[in-house]
Amino acid sequence: MTEIRTEANMNNKRNTVVPSGKDAPIGVFDSGVGGLTVVREIMRQIPNEKIIYFGDTARVPYGSKSQETVTRFSEQIVRFLKTFHVKTIVVACNTASAYAMDALERDCDIPIIGVVKPGARMAAEVTRNGRIGVIATEATIGSQIYTQYIQDLNKNVTIYGKACPLFVPLVEEGLLEDPVTDEIARRYLTELIDIDIDTLILGCTHYPLIRSTLGKIMGPKVTLVNPAYETAQELRRMLDKMNLLNDEPPKLGSNRYQFYVSDKAEKFMTFANSIIKYGILSAKTIHIEKY
Ligand code: DGL
Image 1 (spheres, rainbow, N blue to C red):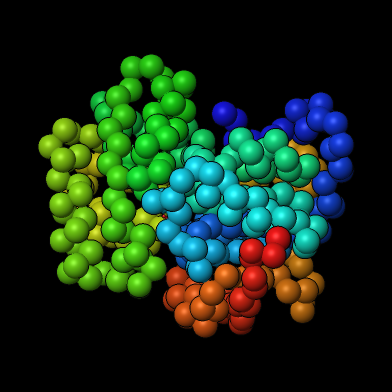
Image 2: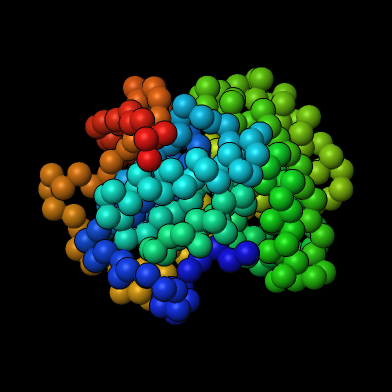
C-alpha cells in the first residue's frame, strides 16, 4: 500500500488529467475536527496555500466502522472536494488513510497524501530503544498499517498498538483538559508505560488536541510523534517537486480557507476557532450523501 502518488506513477495511469495549477486549493478531510490539527500545520508550514476542509461531523466516528463504509464515505468526500478543482487531497484521518487509501489512489486523478506514512517514518527515525507505541482508533490499530510501514523501514523495531476509542468523542465534545479525559488516558496508557516504549505515535488526528494530557502521563522520556507535522512537510516537498507550490499569498477576499461539514456547522466553527488562530469566519453544512 503506498500513500503518495508521485508524478512519475501518475503519468503511467490511463485517463490521468493534469492537476490544477499552483493557485488551486488543497483539499483536506477528516471524520470531524481531528483533521484541523493537520490544517493547522499546513497553514503554518505552507502559508500561501488555500485550503478547502471537509469534516464529516454527521458520521463521526470512523474508527469503529467497517473498511467498506469508511471507503464509501472517503470516496464521497473526494468527489465533493474535487468540485473545487483542488490540486491535491490530504487524507487528514488515520482511519481513512489505513482503510481507504488504496481505493482512493486507484480512482483519483490528482495526487493524494495520507498521514500514516509520514508519521511512521518520523517514529522510525526518533526511536532510540526500538520500542514504539501507537495509539489510534480500533480500525487503524486493527489494520496494522503502522507496524507494516515502520517494519518496512526497520525490521528491528517493535511496535505496540493500543486502540483508544473514547478519545475521539471526548475531543469532539471539547473535553481537551478535563479530569475525565485524564482518567481515561491513564487507563489506556498504563500498559504502554509498563513496556518501556520511548516513542508514542499519536495515530489519530484528534489526539494532538489532548497532547498535553498524553505528554504528562507518558513522562518526559517518551517522544510524542504528531504525524500532522511530518505530513505538512511531505506535502510541501511533493507540491514543490510537482511545481505546484503556490509562490504568492492568495489575494484578499479569495476565500483562502473554507470549511464544510456534514452537520452542526456552528459547533464546528466554534471549535475550529478555538484551536486555529486565523479567524475562521464560516463553516457550511452540505449534504455529503449526494456526492
Ligand atoms: N481522526 C480520525 C483518525 O485520524 C478518525 C477518528 C474517528 O472518526 O474515529 O483516525
